[in-house]
Length: 119
Ligand SMILES: [Zn+2]
Image (cartoon, rainbow, N blue to C red; front, side):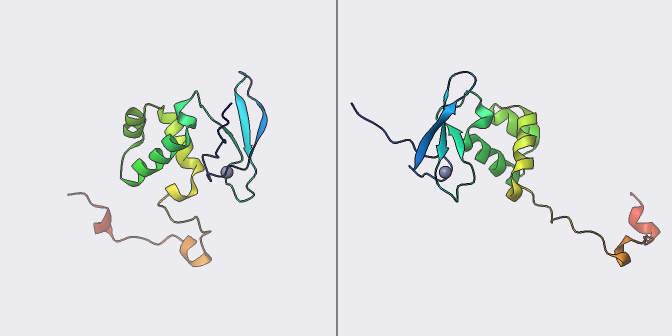
């Protein structure tokens, strides 16, 4: 009998224990690495949107300027899943972290009229 060690798809650690089953009977595993970002995982995901590699590709495509529908079509996952993955990935956002406006910037500053004009 050959036993193949189960590897965590997030940190690639082999310090993995069984962690019960999904409702459909699929074996769940738990990574024993304290620093691992994700502790519970499955070896074979039914749902493409849950596969770590697909989720990484969602972020990569967003960083390369692909839109949500574009990413969903190429990776064969739903646009809703694309949005969910991007919301859960802190590094995916290119926007600056939200900073509470200070008293001086909160006040309305009138812009020059020319800035709003469309030609
Ligand atoms: Zn891990």
